[in-house]
Image (cartoon, helix red, strand yellow):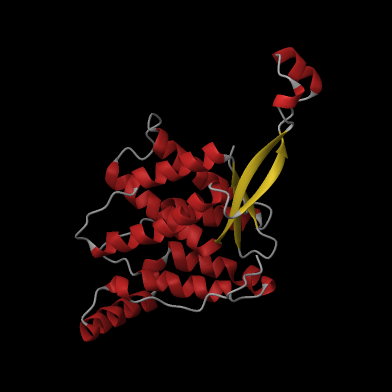
Length: 242
């Protein structure tokens, strides 16, 4: 069973699951994010999602973190089921990894973009991959319930659920700047600026600065004779205090 928790310093979320949970989440997202190989914006969207999948894959391979979780298999249940004590344990291993909040919320918007493109029936209850993505989406959202007031939580939920990414307007660098800035904030600063950060993600198209950056990036690409995906912002802290 997947679990998502907000980290202590509000930097991101910790995502937990056993091998099969994380493996199926990986397969679901990987299946859904099919793009047009000649569309540079979709290529950049996929690459951002591949960063999440990279961490997810390394987590269930045991290369990030893990916890032992009680599985409620007591002595009486074990005997009733006929298991020998030496063959079973009362613990399950849950793998886990941390992921930055602005990045995970952008990723959820990007996954929704690809789902809508793949299948106009966004709430297709018979598609296991869409169901898994929606389930994960809801876990991430609800990890914020105790962090925000009810009014703020509902505002973010509404904004993220209604927001739609446009491949024609997508400029990854806008979101990279947001993530780098957020990563370098203190715990107190993150809490103070959180609503502004989220609004700059799900309402990106309402910001004049977004279009200014888009023009700046396009001009820089012409000058450097490169594609948009060749320009990235650096500055993530080496040791994140999650």
